[in-house]
Length: 232
Image (cartoon, rainbow, N blue to C red):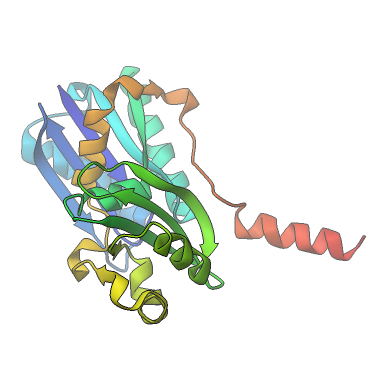
């Protein structure tokens, strides 16, 4: 069984190829090129280095959000196109859960966060080791999120690119109740996207039904709504 995983939801473009539960290829790129320029060459490299082709892939997994609206759409569209080649199915993967997966053995609460701008983060919480979900994905003010985490009553590990922006505020709010993941763990690993996809093959859907998961409307839509309200 072969699975190809794709993530373009954040600042890093990632591709992983898994065969029978083992990662055979993992690539991550963060450079001046756009994800649209990087993604397909990375997919081709994955096949070239493993001696496989798109025809060999049995199922795909892709991050459907939360994250960059443009990035999420790109990844979903690319995987739908790859699925179309052989009529394959795909597993939708949550970006925050995949980020937490990289530090799953923390003894406490795992809090993956992404910067959502305007003083907000996309955040969620999982129980370490079991990965039981404790807080659903949501766009929330940093202060409110930290209060929710405190109410869980356990040491919290913050991880994700949101920590790069909000670390000082989180430290002041959480004080000794939190720690931070090593810097290299803050970017979502495509191997984690592959692992979650592998575990949930029974949740694979027809590629035609695969869609981005938006926690709030894209900025252009929000601005349009504000303009329309202003004219009322």
